[in-house]
Image (cartoon, rainbow, N blue to C red):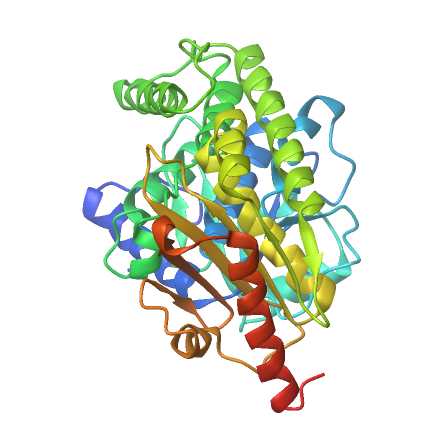
Length: 395
Ligand SMILES: [Mn+2]
């Protein structure tokens, strides 16, 4: 069956699921994604890109958000979310990254609304690059941009809502690596981004047309309240205005910035590698001030940064919130410039059983009672790694 020229509602749940299934397959198998939207992107468009970028970076994918123009001052705050979440924003259409496996097009009714650039055009034309599309503009003069089977294009309050739908399916998906299943994909930032898109496009939820749209909006604002109640930011109520969402994103960005500064302040350097760990009391303070989720997310970002700084590897560690678990969490990340060691083998080498990941990034957990001093413990790991690097002639 040939798909119609103009965008139409996906009629069945099975039809939607099939497309979501395809998109999840692509998200798990490809490594680099370039996200873009229509010219002069609005809140929903940016929020959908940010939300997708957050999901992908949780899966250790590299994500670029291409804005192609200076973003409207009022929406810039949304891009703040990217700063500490390993999402790279690019303003210049002529500076596209190489090796992109997937192009993700958000909230763009028809091909002619895409930013115009020669480089981008080459990417659209490149058949080896998969085009994934999320959109809720249907009928009239709309037209598909994504590849057939990869367009989550259907009736919804916003494009962000459709990314929210993807996250719901993804978080308990059987193909999700076991190491990621225990991680929370729907972080505060993710939920805030989706809410921003829904509220932005529906003017504070007032113009949500169908019962289903209202249901989705309530689901996300409810979900967010629940997340906030569990965390330290306990003063928030129902999210019905954009100001409230702004306020939360601002608070969260500030917390991320401070948490990031703390990790960088604790950074130590060996002969080649760098690491940063938070001690027992310091972790308690960080958990109290920033919350477990932010500490976890920022530690990942810092591991990436330390890896890229040394061009080899970076290690981070902290004590979990005692209310949460009895473990110390570590994360070891390999630079994009270094392929000499499969990090899964490092776990073996260190005789660590409670951990996993992929060749470029692993996480592991050690019971807190088994470690006297986290600084010395981390230093010991770094020494072993450096010895190994030395032996294998890498630096
Ligand atoms: Mn929209």
